[in-house]
Length: 523
Image (tube, rainbow, N blue to C red; front, side, top):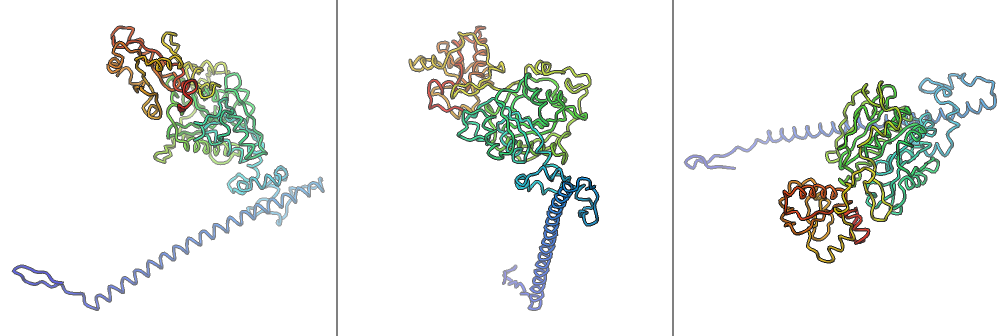
């Protein structure tokens, strides 16, 4: 190869000498052989590690089989010769870990496991980290109260039943709605309209017929919480509102029960275990001593939830429950786990110790009964009420969230439908958040979210123009009632003459779909 230099001088790049090329080629060959040898050695070393691991596992399985066989033989000896000391062992009877079979596994434990149970639970019986036969017997004799058979309960419950928890009580007064099914996977389409606790118990019985499952179809209240909690070894909070959380916590403290708590909203979830004053461990009120009226105002029905998030939280709660019931591992007494689905990240936060000023588990507690608990939880958002009418679904009357508007500020869906049919000029103000409005809306509706009402008065005046009445609408008639109150108060002051009159459409779009237009989607 050549190039032209200054004044056209030809510059020639020298070709490598044959000897140099041979040396380069040989060096590359040696380097390749070294890399290949290194890879072969690494693979061989990895295979050796796995072979050793497999051998160890096979030995462990054989050891457990030997222990079971020896314990069964020891039990037979006891039955034949009750006066002999069965704890006496010889070198031949000693297990590989240095313990005798009669010490490692009691004959009583073995006799409590039927062949069917050994087969069903064999994979967790083989665990070598403290579970085994002893742990399985604890599960079979334990009882768990699960409050909530929704998104979180849908995965908590099957894993408890599948693992062999002897008795499970499910508390849920709500009924299955088709909008639940994307996350509440314990239910199916045929369960729509069925009480969730009943539906869940059906699923658990189908999964594991040997488990006792009881459905409580009434809400958890201050009247029944302490009795239900006291009747069980462990409580799992899978509810969706602060008022019930306070009731569960206070009942657990008064009854001396441990509590596994989980929550999920949107794309995030939380998990922890509350000792509820047992052995000086903190309870829920230690972290949240006073009710915050604005806390827990969000719900899945209003703000949405990614279906897998409550499912994952429920699985983690079931895992903590199994650890607590079998006395294995380290429960999350002192930690709070936070999960972010969009980042696929887990953040563990260290919880503070028990609060000595706690109103329920502190030395100077003021909450000493469930009546005290109910009084101390006034203002917290409670569970929504299910209207038995098809298609109406959830309301929030039990929470005091529906404004007590005067009759002249309210109009029924049927009365408003007459306004539309007659073609009476008016303004239909849809006060839902944009993402709900985008899902579905009535023709002619103007979307101004409730939070933007006071900042949009000029626009509202232009729409009404002092002549057109304003009808406020939302999904359930709750946000629209608040919008009606705000606008009516402003209009009454005379500062906004462009606002003609305001009325709330009671029941919202859910009632509209039920009474006026069955083809309108409910959600």
